[in-house]
Image 1: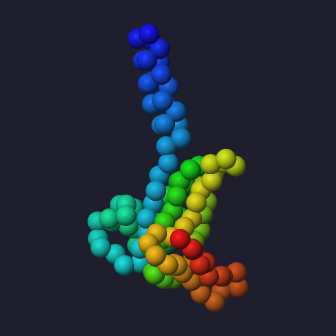
Image 2: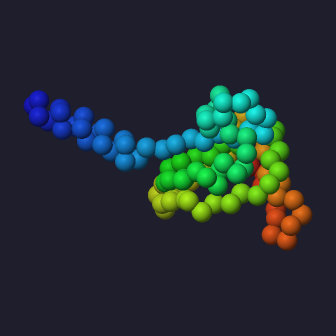
Length: 111
């Protein structure tokens, strides 16, 4: 029975680390000490392009904020059953405004 309990906890621990997800927060109003948490969100869309997004990760943009710039993603590794989610946090929408370039558009991220 002891072996079963130890194996059970090891399997739970192992499966949790395999499917660990990260949450990254962004706000256009910086507070300094940016580390991507909700308390200290990243302020630059450039930081998003530096992240290595994995299956199950979520990227949150602060509702009511407007980000000006482009999102460029190249280091992403999603999976059909574990998507990478882009959404907003707080009440309302977030706008990502890429300007008036040929391939630009405005995202309205709904909470």
